[in-house]
Structures are given as C-alpha cells and as structure tokens.
Amino acid sequence: MVLNNYCGRCLKIMKMKELVAQLFDIGAIKFGQFTLKSGIQSPVYFDLRLIVSYPPLLAQVSDVLWSAVSEKVAQFQSICGVPYTALPIATLMSSKHNLPMLIRRKEAKSYGTKRQIEGIIVKGSSCLVVEDVVTSGASVLETCADLKRVGLKVAHVVVLLDREQGGRGNVEREGVVLHSVLTMSQLMQYLLETGKVTSETVDMVKAFIRENSQVKIVEKCNPTIMSYTERSQLAANPIAKKLLSLMDSKETNLAFSADVKTSHELVKLADAVGPHICILKTHADIMSDFSRDTADQLKALAEKHNFVIMEDRKFADIGNTVQMQYTQEQYCLTSGWAPLVTCHPLPGPGVIDGLMSVAPPGSGCVLVAEMSSSGTLAVGEYTKGAISLAESRPESIVGVVCRNRLSTSPGLIHMTPGVRDKASGDSLGQQYISAETAIGERHTDIIIVGRGIYSAQDPVSTAKMYREKAFQAYNQRLKV
Ligand code: 5BU
Image 1 (cartoon, rainbow, N blue to C red):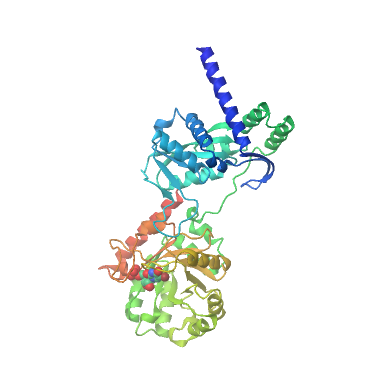
Image 2: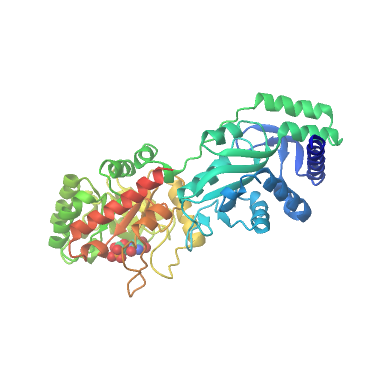
C-alpha cells in the first residue's frame, strides 16, 4: 500500500516533469528581462497563451488542473477561466467534466446586452475559478469580484503555477483558497532535472523570488465599486465634484427629465420632485414661455433642494456657431441657471471649446456618447471617440449620456436616459431599461427618467420609488 502510494507519487512527478519540459520546449517558459503586469522586472516569464496551438498539451494542462481540485469538484456548479489565457483551459475542463462554464468579459461591452458575465448565472451557487499563473493575484481577484458581484460564491481558485510572489496570501486574505499545481521552485527544479536550464539559472530565479516574494496588488481604479464621494475627490471639474458628493449626501442618483411645455408646470414639478433628485434635466426649447423669470425660479429651486440643472440642448455644431447659440438671449444660459449643458461629440473638440469659452465659470458639458433610441448611430467607433474626447477634457466634460459604463475615469459621470418601469419603449423608438439594469448591471451612475415620473398619477411618490431603486442598486454595487 505504502509502495503503491509512493509509486503513484513518483509517477505524478514524472508526468509533471514531462509537462514542464514540454512547456519549455514550445517556448511557454522564457528567460530574459520581462516587465510583469504588477510592474516588476522578472528574469522568467510564462506565456501559456501559446498552448492553444498544441491541443494535446492544452488537454494535459486542463487535466492536471482538474486533478488539483478533484476532491472539491462536487462543490462547484460552474467554472470560469480568468481571461484570456485560462479561457480555453476552463472550456476543456467544463466540457470534459460537464461543469457549466461562465465567461467573464474583461472589457465593458458597448453594445447588446452588456453583461460582464456570460452564461447562466445561478445566484448563490459556487463557481470554480481557473487561472494559468498567479503572481500578485490581482487578475484572479478581479475575476472573483465580478463573479461575486452577480451573486455567485467563489471560494476556490485553481492555478497551474504559483510564482510564490505573494499571490497566495493576497488571494487567501480575500477568503478564496488557492490550489496550485506547481510552484515556481518546483518548476525550476524540474527544468534543472530535465536538463533544460543550468543551476545558475535556477539560482538566479531563486534569488529573484527571495527579493520579490510579496508583490503588492496594483490597485486599479474601478469606479463601479467606488462611492460617489470617493470619486468626487478625483473629479477635475467643480460641478462634477459637487454633483458626485451631493448624490451621496442626498442619497439620490435620480435625474428628472421635466419635459413639460410651460414654465408654470416645470417650476411646480421641480419644486415637488426636487427633494428626490440630483439633477433636473430641462429642454428649454420645448417650452412655449421660457423666460428669464423661469431661469431665475429654477436657479432658486436648485439651491433650495440642492440639485444641479442640466439643459439638454444637445449642441452639435462647430465652435463658432455653438458660441452664438449659447449666448443667444432667449434661453439665458449665460446667467448660469443651467451649469450643465449636453452636446454631441460629432463636431469634435471645437464644440467643447466653443461652449466653454462663453459658459459662466463652474459650468460643464455632458457628451452624448450613446443614445437610447433604436437604430442610434452613436455606437462603436463613434462612442469610443466620444469617450476619448471626454477623458481628454476632464476639466470641461463632467459626464456622458450613455447606456453602459464606458470609461474607468472616476470623475466622469455616466448618465442613462430611457429608464422606466413597466414599459419597453414608445412608438417613436425610445427603448427603456429598468433602474436596476442601468445602475446594477450596466454600472452607470445616474438614471434619467422623464415620462415615467411626470406622466405618473403621483409624480412625487413615483420619483421617490425610482430614487430608492436606483440608489439601492448603487449601494448593492459597493458591497462587493
Ligand atoms: P423619457 O420620457 O424618460 O423617455 O425621456 C427621456 C429624456 O431623455 C428625454 O428628455 C430625451 O430627450 C432624453 N434622452 C433620451 O431619452 N435618450 C437619449 O439617448 C438622450 C436623451 Br441623449
């Protein structure tokens, strides 16, 4: 029995040595000078992306990973590979052992359903995370956080190689057990024993590990799990700072789009709904009687109820023309009643320069990066261009109108129109999503609700309902 166990172990080591030698032979283990994701310089690098070109090797790697957690597998209802290298490995494990797979998107998708996790999510079920190499554990923890955010449990991660640089501790401190097939020391020993490297190389790698045994996780700024208050400190524009901090202090991420046709209605609604909103969005040009008096009354209400006014004018011309439009008397924008105005990125930076050259100090623009209407052309490269423009002008561009989180800049406020409960759209192409979808799933910051509130029987209690749903979705997001 003892002999059998011993032989079994010997066999396992021999197989592992063979696997390591094969990985070396295909160039998946390299020696030289490499900069790792954590920023440190390493004399050794593992590039397992190559194994997709060697199907038998890919299958072997998947098998050894599965064996490393074979005693635990009954606990898992799904498996997820850390993108991208571990994706094919997890696919093979999933397929061979009939364990449903989930795919985590690394980038936010700017079209379609915009799910961060693809596949069937059974809330409360356990997911096994698979990774090729762990250094600081940052990538593993990012995947775990995204899985947890959608309601899955993650208690185990299996990796092929633990580089012995602090990843185990970092991962286990977050309550996740790390199972590794190989450590860096074992791997170097196997390479030495199979004649792939010299003892000098082994010593050099050992010295490197000794000096870099605690690689810190480089904190990536993730605005979706930061509070509005934290983000307000990182915003470059005073209105963005004010808006983000009032959202937390007032506990609202609801913008009310008061698309009514008379000043009387607008002022009445703004006063009634004011205690529940962070932004009052107006369309001065749909009103029959907008005047200086309307502007003054709105300004007073913004102070009284502590909200910011955004005139949804959607400027879309060259700088010189938008300058003239902004300063035209009728809508009194130069008086500063609406510190935020919307504009299309279509003309390029000139539209921002034009507006900012005439807007009162402390104003800002909100760029339309995506639209809620069906068939919108604000997609793909156009949306990407809008985000680059917004990110390059943080002092002027406070936010974007969008349907998805598009940027990781903490100061850039993502505002989502086309939000309404119990409606899918209107007869003219408007498309609605719920407050929970916008804030909880698509990770935007503010919902913009128009008809959902002003057409309701009781606009105030309806606004309260939207406010609670959207703010709860935000709080939920922070709990990860
Ligand atoms: P609704 O009544 O909630 O459908 O009104 C939405 C408001 O948001 C309305 O004022 C639109 O002009 C505005 N809007 C939008 O619905 N979709 C967009 O893509 C943009 C603005 Br940009």
